[in-house]
Image (tube, rainbow, N blue to C red; front, side):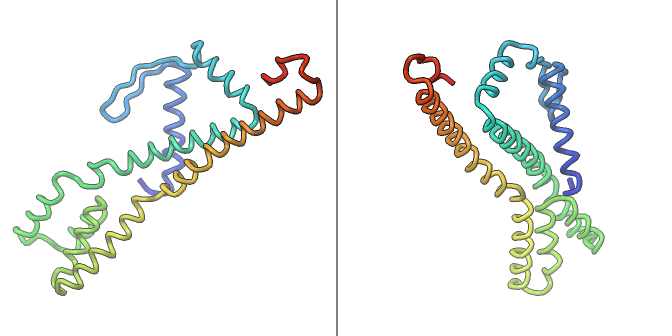
Length: 196
């Protein structure tokens, strides 16, 4: 998956979630089959929607940050699945290329493009004739690039994880201020004013 494909990926995830929640259409995610469940036609959905409306305007950034966090987790789970990061037949195939003396520039290019582990292996194999120290440095350099690519969006996920509870706390403080303002305006004659 390339970077320019990510918006399309997020829209696909949103479309599948909407189909599953609103229309109850069964969804197959990988090898897991999720039966259809029309969530938005149930009483539980109405209760959740009422809670969101009662939460006020601060619920909007909380809901958006929750959806963003779920999208990042799904994208990273898809991008970092073990069959993509470390294909099971990769090492055997490389050994076969070496034994059969088929390891050439085209095979190294193919190895580099197919998986992150392949990219690291290709860097080591490319510099294997230059000595152990140079090969080790090239593997470390390639691994640092691969790690950087694999950690993509995790800083954003950490930011969302820090901001979301603070938004909830801010909503609580705003609610308490509104309750005290209602008490100040009408006095303690009507206790229901404290409920919002």
